[in-house]
Image (cartoon, rainbow over all chains, first blue to last red; front, side, top):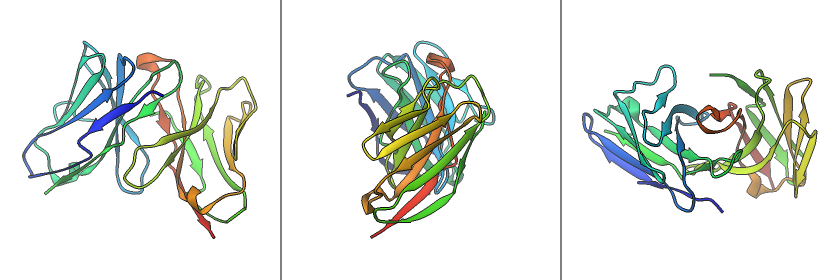
Length: 114
Length: 114
């Protein structure tokens, strides 16, 4: 089946530094990928839609300058959290659509900013 | 974001019982309604999904009931097992590609007691 690989699974960084999270579609091409953020005991909130070869589309209230998204190829999208602060600590999950309707999710990245 | 409302927030069921989780949506243009299971620290995994042209879909112990006129859908877990203890999310999306954003319900934490 379609697989989305997300790395790293866990990362701890110091406040003020930047962190990059990778999301790869392993056996299909993804012109569109989706990035979600999930706080403890809460639902997944869509942050942005990543589009191969063009700018990402951000949801209302998401700072595009803080959460940089690059979708340089049909199998790779990256999310960079810039100048991270403790309030950015969260579980970040990517998703892609291998077919018209289905969605496949990565295993998530636990970001802790200290 | 367009809303998908999910209830209950938490649910406790005895082993062998039936777990029922309900969702309601607003956007009549939604055309794909999946249910996801999520364990702590993991990405969501697809359980079962339905499109609005059918009223019920069953896969093993999992059944989706869909009421298009009421804009509601529900997940039934038959013969619930302790291994089913997890967080369940309903979701809805419309179309494909950039417009195919998947919007999640608030989640239901299910505990199945042995």
